[in-house]
Length: 221
Image (cartoon, rainbow, N blue to C red; front, side, top):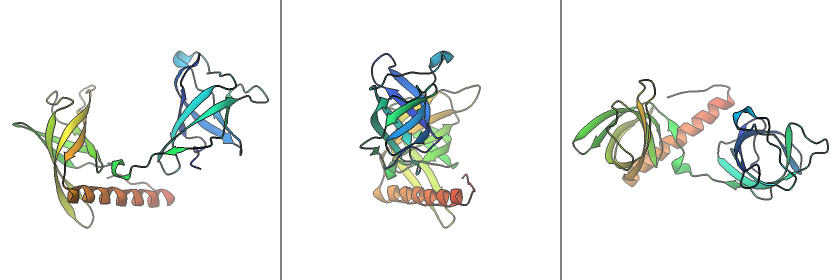
């Protein structure tokens, strides 16, 4: 089963009741029947969340392979009352959402955006087979829902290939203290060949990252 990794962040959701809300927690330890997670902090530093036995909760997290997972479970009582921990029953089923084509990897390549008669220069932040995000040099030129043309070059140690695609703006992060805007884009008209080239690059980058992590190293492109 794709259980949470001990010590790694997880999102703790109480869908209804007096403790209804979304919180942050982490897995402390586990047995064959129970998971023990830290009691989430209440908003405003008002202490820790306490839940009655039988309360339904939902956990969302990334497993050891960084694949998004989620499961529903129920709170159990701890024998000692559990001042800092919550006891959760081990789930019967874990949903694991692996969409390889949507996995994004960080990059720092120049990109050109064309919106109507306007041409904007940008720097890619990450890319996947389904879209990308980029740091924009201008301010306020784009809005969510705008249709644009995106052009950039994928660079590898062995080869480079040009990407050109229609896209839609799906997000604009407001600028802060003079920093550039971060825009998110969904590819809407890309050739199958170009999409496969991006996905092949993403897959190779993931393999390289795993190899480097196993060797105790990291790399940034």
